[in-house]
Image 1: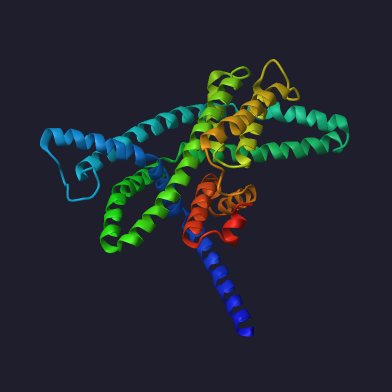
Image 2 (image 1 turned 135 degrees about the vertical axis):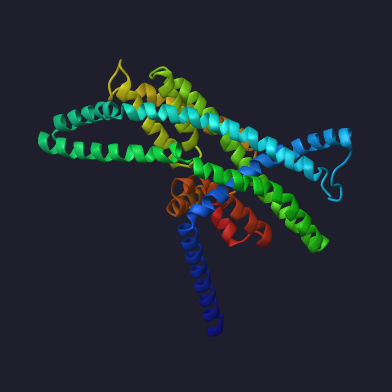
Length: 365
């Protein structure tokens, strides 16, 4: 009895040490792991398109010169696979660069008038706090609010840097995605050659299950985030200039990938910004903007997203919250965006390898 108890304690200690060691490595080497993880998920999204493109290119090559490299099991030749990856990545790069150029220009415009915007937000708050008398005298309130405003103003330019100066990271992700897409087929061939048929089929089944669940979630979030960003942008055109509405729609698109917190932060920012520059109203008259933003978000998240998802999320809300907090600590904003797909992969892998147990049941809460 004592030996069994000691053995369990020892195993738990080893597991905890492993978790701490893994967290330390992931955090210290985030500059490598973040681009690699992003590239992996991009590969998951683009792989079906690349496979279909490879089939089309392969048929064209067959008609022109015959078949190339037919020793492999796959229906597509080596040359067709390379062509398909290049074509798909060129399309992805063109779309990404177009969005980058548009967003960069709009952020520069917003940063150029950030002082005016901050003043329009701060003054109504300051007037309310002074008139209520709850927060002290006028001098104390003014000093406190001005301090907060200065802190916020110093954060805004730094917050825009990842979007404005992320060219190197984008190039690194692009290279990693290319190698992952091309190397995927070689890995499958090597596994088939070196493993027994049952083991190979089991690994491929687990891989397909993980990819299917993760891809379905990412595609659903991509579609719903796009719809949310577009409709929020169109709705904000009632209150803002078109270029300002566009940038806030883009921000909403990105932030919607962050579960729980993303939509709240984007919505609050859009409301504050809109009421700060809205000429026909005041900061305290925020209810029309709140109604527009909340109506769009609730409609898409409760009516459209469940239909597109076609399956219940394999992890529960508590797990989502804890995953977002943990990965945000490890990888910052990228961790918040990647938290749910990473956790889905971990849960499906545990379920397929070990079956349903206390760990998978815990992750469903």
